[in-house]
Image 1 (cartoon, rainbow, N blue to C red):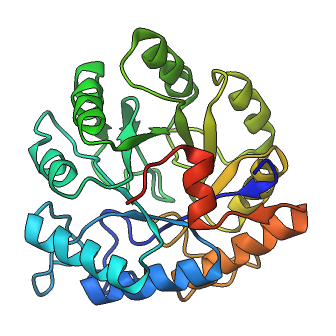
Image 2: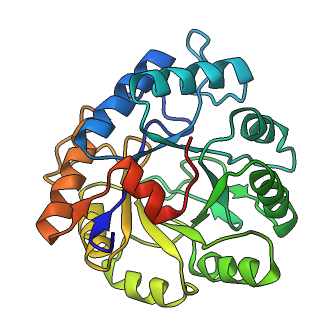
Length: 289
């Protein structure tokens, strides 16, 4: 399995307005895009869940009926696919994602591994949105990890900065979770790590032995050399309409399938093979769905 690369597709993201960008929202759309991603080479789909009310598809939901319909539609269309469920929430109330973890027991789930001032500027220097603290104190992380451990869900630690990458090793040594760490280096958020390929060897050197890692690259055409460098180093990669709307040539992507196809092409150009869902389960130490 050493020559295999696992590709994840993040189907829709948190707040992108489907009236502006062609992101999937309904169960049928999520299933269609999951199938596109799978056919292009993805073995994992990272899932956010959107409000199904008219004109509300840009808003998240933890409604168990909605989440169940979306997951059911994806699994009916692509039974082999691995589900990685989003869990990110601002504030101490994690009851919504916890209820979803306990009811649906996905094979993987995101676990945001540290706090970040989530910032972005407009061209005139004003804030693109009010500065937001994405708060993930250790107590909150431990609550998530307790639920994941109890339900056989493997945590995927999302790390927006270098100290957060290093913190995952501290969590492991403290006994906060079981098994080898799974780290996602989130690169390209304006107030987090930049999309600089030369950072990757330094980040990997800070990970403890046995860590699986991938890059989540946020941006435009500048993200693709970062993906290539991650594959060269033996890491895994993620793309999708949550992370970017742009293909390597700068053209706007019309679908998740197009983004995964472009990323799969890079994996093959580097000389690595693309892991199937069953191979990804073996590589990452996942249970069967």
